[in-house]
Length: 381
Image (cartoon, rainbow, N blue to C red):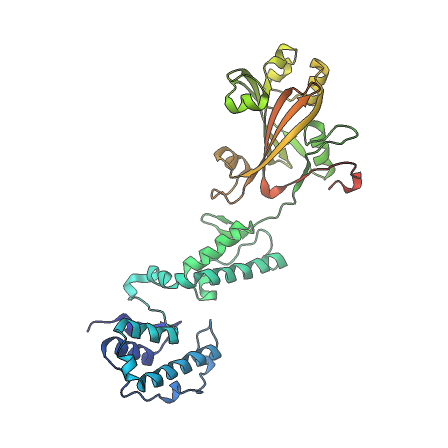
């Protein structure tokens, strides 16, 4: 006997043979209601016991649908002329709209078929699951580093498909609340307090900007330990972008100093500084050495070349990380954690551009402060 999809129609986990029979009649007979007499369970006002309801709904919801179906049957029984004008597809749709059924494909289609049939409802449900897990994380019920229930456990708890559970976990991952480790599971993320960097300089001393000794002092004042590797130095030809930002001819020699900076032995920032070769010709030969310049290049250029940094301009951009940045900061490969790029151009007392520094931070572990005017020191952060 050939099986129709209506033969296995269900609502939730509960089969309704009466509903399925009516769908078959609606599709195959011109007027299926000629002998219809609503049975007691289908009668208007007949309550549905809570034990008959799926776990995801309540008795009142099913009573309403059952009453609507009975009303549809009664209306059709007295309106044969109207009913017969509908084609079989419309008849089935009308019944489905009232009873809220979803078709279940034959078992050979497996979980993929069930996931497709549930996709329409996945949106609201995955958000509900994600919100409930988020509340548990924020309340401390799920602690940092603790493994959250597995996909199978969440599927059983919420009576839903694997795709819906994965969508909920992705929502939490996007918010930075959980981390998924391949082959191990999903764990509550460890919350790192942000590192504060003051981008503006002190109007009284002219120091600041998150560079040199000021940067190390600022980090140390927060109770953390700053460190940096020796820089990697190279000489390149200025491309159009570098030439424009430094105000030098395209193709001119430029000194590039790359440095990795850490806080508490964790990657904190990647910094790359570009200097015109003319500074070396004026005596700043340490720029070519792969060693850290103490107490900083700003003080070094003032001492050797009489170049005083009178100002700088910062351009701040949030963007997706490239591969080098993803590897260095150990960021998720899906790009959900952005990086912050601060592009600084320094000017000397003659308004000439003497340095371009590009510093990259991971966005979720840093906070930046810009002070304007006379800001009290105890209100800096």
